[in-house]
Image (cartoon, rainbow, N blue to C red; front, side):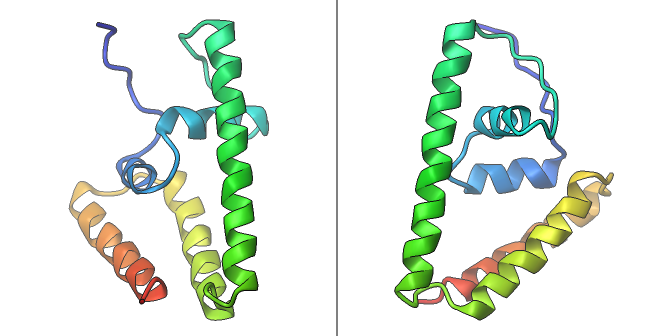
Length: 120
């Protein structure tokens, strides 16, 4: 079995990835493909490009899902505002060192806001 690889993300970003539709590797590939971050991959070229295709399809599916949910009135303008504000905060968090004791508090706030936006 291969050695456990060190993550390229802080704990908060890792926890958000775990709750997302994407794997950490897929996020790394998307970042790499969009020239947002250069990541070295220890996989074959064929495996890499297969995962590029899978990541691209997932991203397309996400965009179509957002369009559908917004178009049907399931995802409301207030929900989009919450997503935008959380995204801005995550952008800051992804570049920051977070004290471990604050990580749980930050994830709790994010979870609460996401649950509120998803009320059904």
